[in-house]
Length: 479
Ligand SMILES: Cc1cc2nc3c(=O)[nH]c(=O)nc-3n(C[C@H](O)[C@H](O)[C@H](O)COP(=O)(O)OP(=O)(O)OC[C@H]3O[C@@H](n4cnc5c(N)ncnc54)[C@H](O)[C@@H]3O)c2cc1C
Image (cartoon, rainbow, N blue to C red; front, side, top):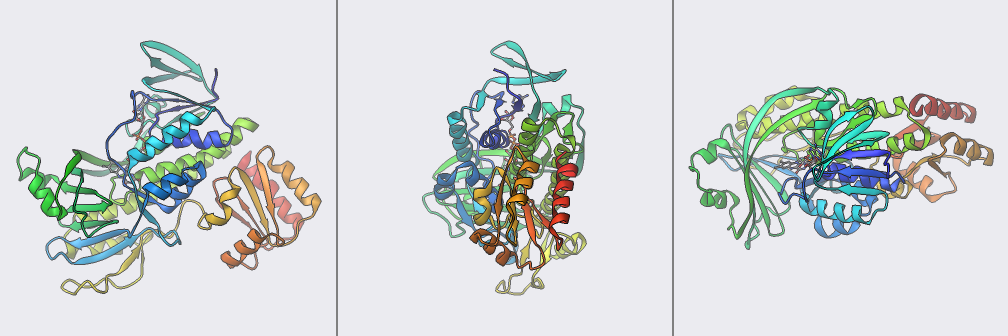
């Protein structure tokens, strides 16, 4: 069977891309060079936008049973053990941060994929190169050439898809060594459901816990002092709890880079293939999932309507800007984390843009009662902070009008967006009333929500002008 879309790499981003395409009715072939899922603990933090994307895929049980709301990031001075900063991602929702286990998520994604008739997953299958719009891969010693309409490279940080497509990266001058231990304890520590970073120039460490799971990360300097033995005592001292069973212990080199172009012809990259960042704010995977979400409906549109270069290019234009902000925040957090307290405020002043400082930080020596709260992000990927209302509208464009719509208008709009569905909501519908009330925007007469939940406003214009805007929208953005 020929698949219009080939996805290289069945990591979390590849699997989520395949599932989002599946939900839009687009078949795909997902190839993975491993023989099975890896069993290594990696990502542990998700933000609220990702929870909503997982919910759209149908993973509500996972969210209910295997995801734990977190209080966010707490930074302490390592020497005085005083808390000096508390940071959360600001998504305008009650809880923005959650703890989870990447391998549990991957297991559930695999189960969803196995249920889908649109996705064909092949393990032990390694992508080699692209020959004239055909992907060459090896499977059980055989070389296969498979034609594609779109090839999506979600093959991780050393992406073969990117290298054979001539994609180059901007490297950030950042490379750090970390030693990470994941273990089970029978004495859950008091820092449950939060991430604590103890900042110091050369001896910083991180600890986090949920349920009976604990993770500790230490630096090269700390491990070097402990010889080649697994440093049980050091880890238990830092974690302030007992190790019952070590799940995984390994060292990582973290670096950061972003691809200069994410699309070459009909080859597109996403996830770690497009960008990597150290896990200081736990956003590497989150951004890969946002890539998948932004990309999937655009590929689906092209699948149904023929190739639309401008639409696909909007994927890389939109995502690059956003990912760059996250890389900036990540590197800033890394800087704070590996500085001593007296150096902390300077980079905060310098970075300016994405930080919203609510209070003056407490000075060294003060108690930690009035710990300042930093909202790390004031801009987010999509304007989907009111998901509860718009969640049922996935897979379609949605027009929410602050007035009644005539039959004729509805007919015209339906033609305009075909074959993707359009849902209409006007003032007689509760959802429209609620959204306009929540958004507190009186002058806006209607809103268009894209399938990735980006929101486009149509301002105070008459009906003819608004239709013109929608036509322009179709011509300029979709064509
Ligand atoms: C210690 C650690 C902690 C982290 N913590 C967080 C966190 O808290 N929050 C967060 O959001 N992120 C975190 N991350 C980052 C997160 O783990 C990655 O961003 C995520 O795994 C990237 O997913 P991906 O699908 O893009 O790539 P990967 O997970 O790397 O998957 C790529 C897949 O492609 C396959 N592949 C590669 N080449 C080929 C080929 N030629 N042919 C076929 N298949 C191929 C690979 O086998 C692999 O399965 C952390 C990472 C680490 C290491």
